Image 1 (cartoon, rainbow, N blue to C red):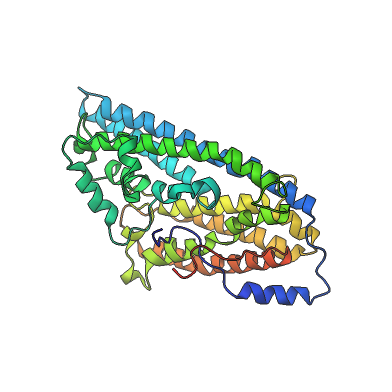
Image 2: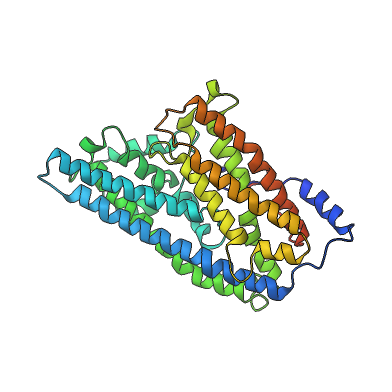
Length: 371
């Protein structure tokens, strides 16, 4: 498996120290019961995870409709063609936003056959995707169907390849009926719909396993079945800091390279982060009747529970105020705003680690340890 910093790095040893401190304090109440964890698992899967993949499929289908309309239309005026291109771009942005809303779930069907990497190969530090896309478009008589993408490199299968074609400076000229660019674009979008449907369908089995612990070899108890969901809450903030902020921003404004950001071509890099935070906030306190927030309150950790809640709300409000970067045109003001928010994200991460210890959730080995 390629060593890609797409998702979710190891937590530090601080969590172990926190757990040691907590076990020695008389203020900590009992950890959540198995019934409470079962209720949380049901809420997370039925209210967030399964609907999230359903919405991703729907958004990719809508994108496919607009892409086909763009690439199959002929005898259009330039303004009509531009309108169809813009419609396809908006549909792409919507689909990417739906991916960002479920991107933190990095276990189960999305990792089977490396589907996560195929949908979104990023960061691509060596520019592999761009070079392979150029080569793929030069193939004579190539048929860009599901079989083609099934056997292709992961860098050709997903959102980055679509973005390069739809938001290229020459997209209006290149995306004409029967061109390689259009045939590839329609083919990759169709393949992504196929993959999203497979993930959605496979969650029927994943949900059955996770919601029936003890009856299968995967999970013994509801608390154990909650661990991948807790990892999905506690670990993504490190990715936001390392790759969505530090990687493009560098050590100073002079060394910033916004072309390293996740979605710079489609002008939604900052929106991606905000969507990630909103999704994590939902996983933390937006579920009914049980949430991590409510579990912390019942464990006697009102201050910690409310501190985390306030952090999510404040970060979302602050990110919403930051203007999106136009292509590579990062301003000094936006650069400063982003850098100033990093410590708050790090503090939120530490408090979520503390929450895991309070709830007696041991996240264990991370697949990216040692990367």
